[in-house]
Image 1 (cartoon, rainbow, N blue to C red):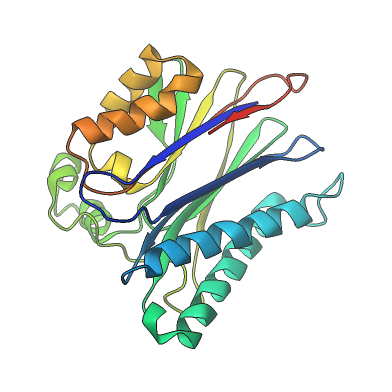
Image 2: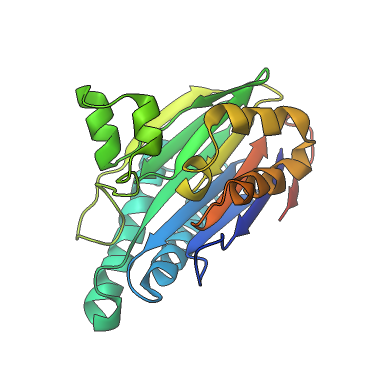
Length: 253
């Protein structure tokens, strides 16, 4: 496996409230998380950091065994529930953090299968044979309008309310994640990103960047594309390339 990531504060923020983590375990499992915080002067940064730290701890402990005691979807669900509880309790104990929350998109790769679980509008894409496919569904007001047929996908991309999400970690005692599993091939690339990328760079533009750039330059090039589009939000892109199991994992960030 190859892993690379880049994050940037963007052109309109005073703080980067995005967070990401990734890891490779001795049993060959690769995991990654991207979080996009929200709320308060520094609440969003705290929420995304708490979520990323909590999920890293859960994944590391759960996947430490040769065969995980629970199925991977169950482990992801448990990781998100624990992260939600951690943020929610922190906000209740610190009035200055009231209302903070974060999106999350998590990926686990094991034996040719990609497991995804997400809350909010941070996304996962699959790049294969020069094309990019969206694998997640935004939990947002605009996505709900698209699904109802009230607006088109093109209108959604320009909608002024596209940042309004309908689910987030930490805003309530419970949260519902959405999960999916897909088979991956050697050479496939998984892209996890915050909406600071997807709101400013179209899917076709992202695919073009990934076609044109070597793998370890692509995350930075995607972030640069968002900045060139006057991206005002925090921007994070994390890429994982599937290779043969014999390949040693390389991780740059």
